Image (cartoon, rainbow, N blue to C red; front, top):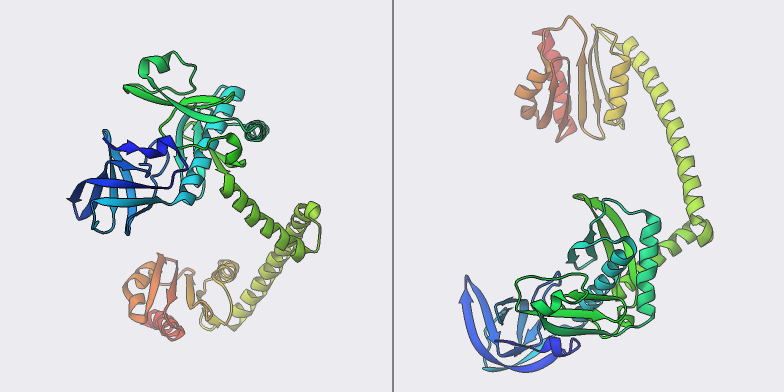
Length: 389
């Protein structure tokens, strides 16, 4: 049995221990100690990392009453020194204790249970048993949770039998365990849990709900606590400061300023689209007038595929064989009217690779992209030559 020192003091970061067993399995090196400060993965909380002497601890997990440490190199001694990455541990403690507070507030305010908890490196999530939650209710829960933090309630843990736990007023129970660890937050929550926690709610710092989304008939709540929430605030404050400077306005007016500018940009985009459409119509008329033997072949220097398509649409009521290309994007669009014995899609499929291109299409319209403008031009000529054969 491995003695779990992290339950005696969740802030303990180092200890001396004896190596009980060393295991080599599938190219991995694993050690078992008689005592450890390393928390194994469980209850939605990732495992601790750190060092055992000079060996890096990559992962920690438990089986039965033993804790296994995955390390990156062999240990040289039987008596070793263990040191946890305490900053990572405290971060997870803030997230985990924050999750208990937040889940309890959802339970008390909305009578909803938490079906799962996940703690990631960027954010944490809980899934609550409601298909949707309004922004107003989310805000109320968040305020209630932070009030629990400000009141700085004590957080503790007790070990009870399963039968004893069933007689307690717990938010969440466990079945099939001889001994149940119950984490209690005075006046806030009591819940079966195997994770590490802060000593008082004030150490969580702050709980900030980032967003919510529907998930398999539930609602997933994304949140950050403590230093993560502070860092998120700092990052967003930098963004707001940059926007305020860029738009030469105050923080209180930045949203209105951006919305107004976006509406102005939409109007400009609409007008630009109209002008481009008129230009394409004019260019289509020019090409039609310049065509010879009902063949139109032209390479534009800076047109995009969207413009080529607009010009082709303007030519759709003619019997022309039309080849339009963009030198900038090395793209080609080919369209044909009636009276031509050629299947464009088939021709592209059989020939385009010979010219360093790729593409395809239907019998009467096809498009492609080329590695070089020279390959595009040669392919265009091959199309025209095919008409005369």
